[in-house]
Length: 217
Image (cartoon, rainbow, N blue to C red):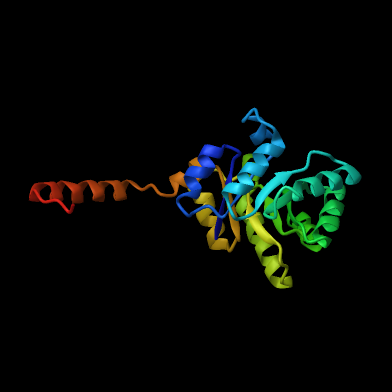
């Protein structure tokens, strides 16, 4: 499974990219707005930090304008994945851009039927929002299972990018179901490292080593 980080914070991106665990980045207008900087400048800088896909979202809702925005975003760097909403105009834009060889991330997916349409439109990624489904009493992971089954059955190239991830358990469950990517906030990626027994075991090892009075260096 690939890990994308869901942020526009350049310090977080640099720090986590240095671990070798970051395969890409997803952004949206809300995340970039928090930086107080130019959207296009931030996207370009992120694309220069990571080698993998960097999702940059269109803000138009009509096909003609969305396509123009998508073409401008795609021109920023070769690793830009243009993000479009799962609407009729979004899927038309996805088809037009993907036919030109542009990576497209179709976002705000909440049903397997929507995911099927995105795959047929040539999406490089489909982003089902599991946390938001959980919030309204539905099972977000059931949707991931359905999409993975459908994509495998028809051998679609579209990668399942699990979004709206709320914690490590979402990541583990998505991996077990065969999802291709999980996009996670920096906090969640860091949480994946942690376990109290790891901390306890390390403390014990260090205490025993200290008693020996030795040094390695």
